[in-house]
Image (cartoon, rainbow, N blue to C red; front, side, top):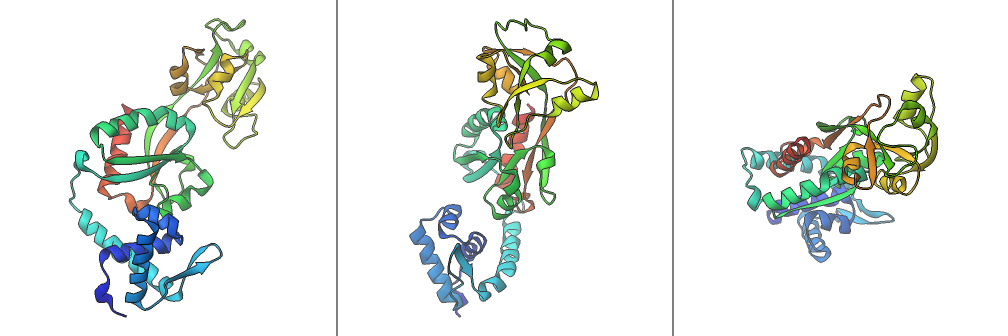
Length: 299
């Protein structure tokens, strides 16, 4: 074993390979081509005198030596990162970073356009990848660095993750222009009598917060259709006599197609928070991105 040939870049490569256990995924995280990554792995094997990772049925399998190195290596590199990042200042105009943000279709609709345009103006060399929110996989994605930031309701935040409140949303009723029964006002009896569209993110559900609020006062509504996302709802409503409750940020964006009315009974809204892993808390670029997102969301 000749550690004189090891440098910080090779150690970071080993850390990512041990986390991903897949050459394609590791190369993407490191912004390297697969041949370049394979060359680095060869240098690591030569320097450490061990295969480190060997092909398996589901990607690369770490050797015993690699497993022994994993935790000390991570701790050592985290120490280096803390030293390097301490006191670092950010100049957005020259900041080079790539961030992956996971969010639902609603949150992307509410924030993506404004956030992306603002970032391009302030930090033109930052790249943002938006991806669908997968609540069940979120912990693993944040731990493995597959997602840098998630935007979701606080109850979906994994217990070990950091979070920050971004904004509060309210529900409003939408009905098509020219609806034969809805002419700018909506009382409780009419609300319950009309057919409703509901959103069930997991698919197949026909009840939500509105039904719980109605049940509390001894009323029910007629749910005729369930969808998995909010964005299609205004289109459905604009072409039918069904009504729906959707977040105000979506409704305000399609008021040319639908009437927007207050619900005839109190319906609890929800909060959207940013969620991230502890390891990125002190990272200057990630911290700047989170702060900028919070400012835009609350502005």
